[in-house]
Amino acid sequence: MSFYKEIAPFIEYIRSIRKLKTYLSFDIEFPSKWVIPKSMVEEGQVVSFETEDSNKKGISFVTPLDEANTSSTLSKISKIIKLNKEKEIKEKLFKHTIEQLKETFEKTDLDKLKTLYFDFELEQTELEINDESETGEDITMAEQRESEG
Image (tube, rainbow, N blue to C red; front, top):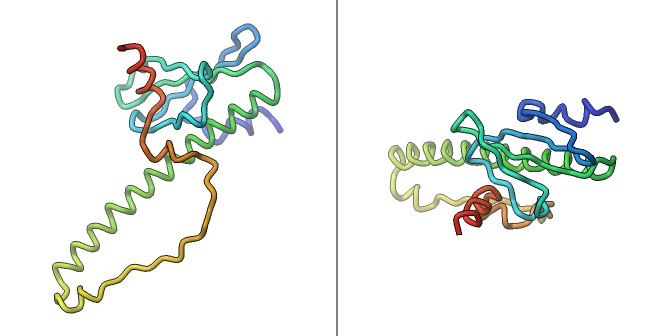
């Protein structure tokens, strides 16, 4: 697979790619509200950096310069992007649904509302990402706490 095909899914987030002796550094700018689950990165693999845009945060993903590690790091970056984009879509859907419910409650008779029931058949799906992502724990925030303490 070509290098371009590997980075194409997240090209809009790449600030730079650098070679550091025997390492590659993928400098990525994410929206500041995005999270990076600790379970997805190893200690020393990510370093935060300042960005010019206050709505963004910079993260450098550092990996040994070989095919397996580079591919693994690119895969992790893709998963982080997918996780956060999915979260954003769910949040928008949630807000939209709340607005629809408000309208329904305003326009519908109380007796009919009492029969309101939601039922979803939930499939058991195993996420590749640990539950730490649900806590909103951001690796850069944890790093900031460590440097302050």
